Image (cartoon, helix red, strand yellow):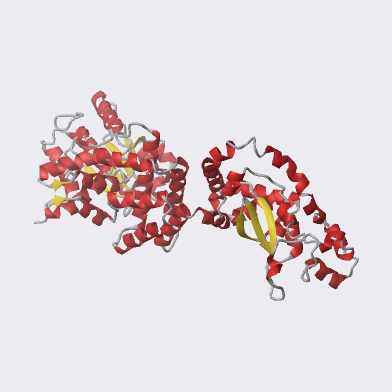
Amino acid sequence: MASMALYRRYRPQVFEEVLGQEHVTETLQAGIKDGRVAHAYLFSGSRGTGKTSTARILAKALNCEKGPTPIPCNACDTCRAITEGSSLDVIEIDAASHGGVDDVRDLRENALLAPANARRKVYIVDEAHMVSTQGWNAFLKTVEEPPEHVIFVFATTEPHKVLPTILSRCQRFDFRRVSSTQIADHLAKVCAEEGITADEGALQLVARAAEGGVRDALSTLDQLASTGSVDLADAARLLGAMGGDALFAFADALAVNDTPAAIGMVARFVEEGHDMRVLAREVLEHVRGLVLTKQVEDTSELIDATEETRARFAAQAERFGQGKLVHLLRLFTDALVDMRNQASPRLTIELAVMRATVPEVDDTAVAAIGRIERLERILEVGGAAQAPAPAPAAPAEAAPAEAKPATEAEPATEAERAKTTPPPEKTAPKKSAPKKSAPVEAAPSAAASLDLDKLRRSWAMVLEEIRKASKRVHSYVMDATPVSIESGELVLEHRFAWHAEQLVVPKNAGMIAAAVNQVLGVSPKIRATVGQRPDEDEESTDFVDATDDAPEDPVDILKAGFGDDLKIDE
């Protein structure tokens, strides 16, 4: 003989046994006690929250031989028949397969007949949203004015699909999802009665995976208890979930932006057969725990975890900033949504990991990352930059005077005059002229902290800031490459001498320095070099001379094609 499933064996038989629905059961009990029983009810809520069980208890309470009573005896013939599902006067209908207009007509005709044994005839219509529109229309008059001995109970997970004309004729009760704590406590009681040895952590994992459905939790427990004991590892394997240690290790990798470690963990989870959707939900729940730990002193009522786990949350939360945690919540929430339409859930998770650990690839977080990095840079150099503030005041005032040699090449027209009428200084080496130009001054300690590798990784963001400020300057600098940082001066290399000249024009150099400051929090001086070409010797990589006559100057190329009268506006 097949054994009865736990969810059937432990189905509630009185209102007090219905978990987490006191707002429903107390109202129904009061109505039965006062004789105020409606002719039609609508029970709505997610699966496994007690809708059908409550409808059966309501039927027993109205038909109990000792009633109507708020507490059915479950001992009389009527109560036992309803519990066993053999009562002729309590009719359960699955609307998913009997929701057509012909089925409703049969139901309507049978409703006119008097009860066979019970006091009231109760129709429990499960999955009521599956009744067709024509069926509801045929049912409308009967629901509005049923025979005195008939009560309808409609149960549905999607009340918005029920016709408004039906809703208006029913008393509606919304069943809430049962909390994980209540489900875990209920599972512990079931285990105690069944003689099942179960870990507290395993029961909590099963309760969370049930998502508020008691029936789902009991079904999972039934499956796990086949060996007589329930432990956390078995529960994690069955549910495709990560263990607590794995979640903390994964969060540690995200905290330090360790992309290889995080991607490697995802690969291991896939090999172990974990569901990527479950993984995304668990990461979200874990990050939520970290957020709550940082914001709330007492999380005992907010986080379903043991005291030891909450202590681990508190320790790990110190490794994250609040902005990083909020960003992780958004990333994995988006990943969970994208998995519904993506063919590869693994790729979706890996993309979320990349965006979390490599900020430069996350175009939606460019501005936020820039602000965060700038603040971090300011914190690193702030003390050193503020202390010598009075000292550099004098050099800063003298900077414009030193920068004058570089201004000779500021307008394009002067560059043209330099080619036709070489200035007297032509014979003197001027390759250090742009080196002297310092359109934007910064505290030496702050500029010295500028890291070349960090700048190169963030160069795309710098270019974007320049483009926002001036498309013309952006056209000059878009093909330039940061090659070195010397004494707080950023050296940019360009293929063309004329473009390199434009980079050191005070106004243009100021825009470039301001863009670097916007992204990295440091405002360097700007110098420019011309990249070595095959027909030039190594000296051509020295710093650009504002009066150099480069053979590949784009202005010369344009004039060669269109004539010397060509004028180029700044």
